[in-house]
Amino acid sequence: MSRDIELKEGWESVVKFLSDKFADGDKLDLDSIIYLIGVQELGKGIHTFKKDEKVNLMHIAICRLLEPYGYYEFDFIDPDGWPHYKVLEDLPTLKPGEQSILMKEAVVKYFSSGDN
Image (cartoon, rainbow, N blue to C red; front, side, top):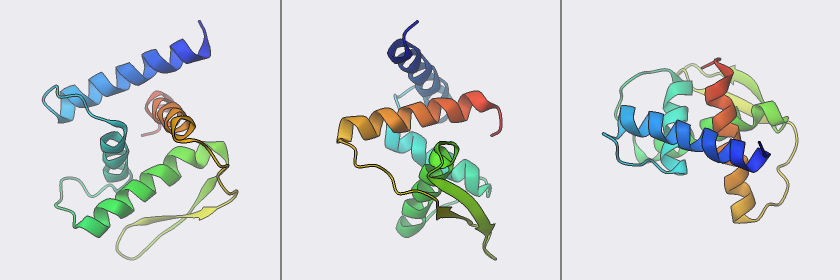
């Protein structure tokens, strides 16, 4: 099976699982899934987040998702319980479609790793 087909099937599986669990079957998009990963990584459970906290949650998720690719490394948890990452390598310049593919691949890896 080609890498593209594996990614497509893996992505569809993750979307279905999360959409059924968190959106009553409405199809979640990539940003929504990244947000959910941020909430998971923060580990504070159900909570109402302010707008700036939502942006920070997405940042946490992106760092965690791209950590296995060598772009980020976990650094510490601050006194409020928020994880912080340090940049190891600058992200390459990618076209929007390439960014989407990288993030979808990272999401599929995240959910197939069993570490979350």
